[in-house]
Image (cartoon, rainbow, N blue to C red; front, side):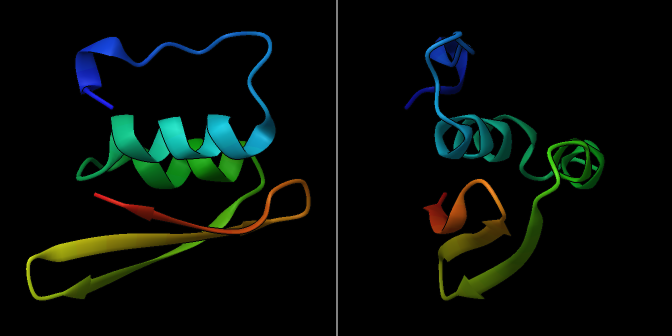
Length: 67
């Protein structure tokens, strides 16, 4: 997904909304507040050049987002 083309739609599932939120706010201080608003906990893991966000929440279960 390109950052310019990310839009939130009514048919998006909670997991898709969480993924789009991470892609939009990754690297900014607003990521923590936006995920807290969605009741999602996260952890950031960097392995070499790859950065992963592990998200967990009641509605989404556990998902991994790779940047």
